[in-house]
Length: 175
Image: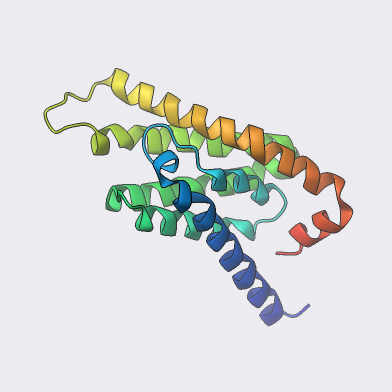
């Protein structure tokens, strides 16, 4: 396949994944944003273990979801959340090449550290003292809620993809 067709395929896949991320996040915004984040779209973070080409779509989807969040937390969340997704995607790809199941760890850890690290500064009152304990609790809350979605939905999705040859072939075509 020539380079222009590969580029078009990457753009189309990225657009579909970004749209899917937004559609799976915004309708349940009350559960998708805040210290405990149950974003169904985070189940898609398993896709980079199959192909590098999913990283742009996931990152764009996260950017758009954070930008369109009805309770928008501003530039720190829009940029920070997107950066966390981008970093986790790269790490998932690297680990996923060695062992697909290791690829589910980066979204949990990276989102816990980055997003959980800045959320107290965005969510707590100006009069509240932000302590190391508050930041640590926030990191744990984000990591645990991410783990629940990735393990409960993303991992079964990964098994389905791996056990279904036609689906696996389609998923791996993005590159």
